[in-house]
Length: 385
Figure (cartoon, rainbow, N blue to C red):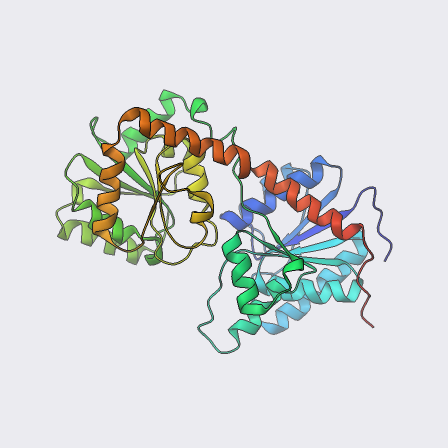
C-alpha cells in the first residue's frame, strides 16, 4: 500500500471518547498531527469528546470498539481494514486491548504500521488474561507511559527493549499555570466546597475507587486537628462514596470531609490546595494528578510506588510517602505544613520547573510524532497473504 509521506494519515483506536487520560491523550495527539499537516482519524464507539475532537479538524469514525465480544472484534477488524485502505492510513495506533486486537489484524491485512500505548498494568485475574493483555505489547513500537510500565512490559511479555519507547504523559503549562487562575475562580470553588477561611486544605484528585487511597486520607485526617479539611475531587461508584461518608461520620469527621465529584476547573481546584495528595495503594502507571499539582506549584505528596518516584525527588520537588499507612501520611502532611514558608515555596518552584522541563503536553506530542516518523522512514511490514 503506497503511503504519501508528505501528508501521512494516523488512525487512533480506543473504546470510547468519554473522559480520562487515554481520551485526553488521543485528542492531544490528534491536535499535534493536524498541527504538522498530517491527517488524523480516531475510531471509537463515540462519546462526549467527539465534538472536541472534530473541532480540532480530526475525523471520527464510529465503530463498536468498546465491545470485547470476539465476533464484534472480528467485525471491527474488517471495518478497520476497509477504513485503512480507503483513507490510505499509514499508522494504526491502538490505545486499548479489544480495539488493539482488531487494529492488529487490520494492520497485518493492509501493511499499515502498528503502534500501541501501554497505559496501565492490566490485571491478570482470569485465565488467559495475560494473553489478552499481550496485544498491547505487540506493536512495532510500544509506547510505555513511564519507566515503571516499560519494566512491567518486559517482565510480563518479554518485549524487546528496542521496540519500547518511554513517553511520559504531559500537561499544558499554560492551562496549569498558577498565574492564570483568578481570585474569582478560587472564590467560586471555595464557596461550593464550603471551606472555612482558616481551612488547611488537602486535595486528593482521583476517581473514587478503593485503590486510590481516599479511605487512607480519611483515616489520616482523624489524626490531624482542625482546621485540616480533606477534599476529594472525582466521581465514582455511589456505594464506595457512601462508604467514605460513613467512615468520616464514624470518625467524627463529617464536617471536615468534602466529596465534591467532578470539577471542570482543575487548575483552580489545585490552587485551593495547601497540599495536593496522591495516595494510591496500588502501583500507578503514571499519575497525571502528580504533575498537574506540580505544574500549579503546590506541595505534592505522592505514594512511593509505581511511576511517581520517576517524577518526584523526595524533599526536592515534592514528597514521597509509603502507601496505605494513615499514621505515616498524617505525619508527612504535618511535616509539610511545619516547613518555613520560604522553604516550602522553594520546593513548589522546583516542582513547576520539573514539569516545564520534562512533562509537558508538547514534549509528549513531539516524542510520539518522532516515533511515528521513525516507522514511516523504514519499510512497511509485509502484508499478510
